[in-house]
Length: 113
Image (cartoon, rainbow, N blue to C red; front, top):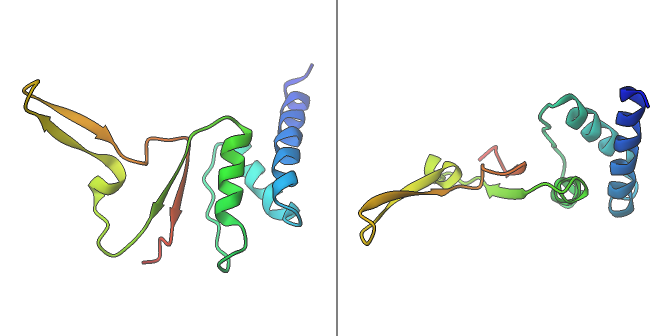
């Protein structure tokens, strides 16, 4: 089977999975899948309640990927996204605790704040 045909089949299957949850959002799903297939990033801008979070969660679930969400606020620190090193007194060493950016699909919500 040709790679292009296989890629289309996989995208169609993923699109079908997303379509069972996201009804009436065919154009958004197609654009999301195009960016996904191209290895790109997606910026979803729309009014509240239009399914942006659901779309991202459904994509992650459809491809078996991890999903995290970061709520951007004026007081958000880099360590809130990247993670932080915490000293373990018992082991006498620093231990890195990963932040939400260590995932496959990251939803950065309200990035305009």
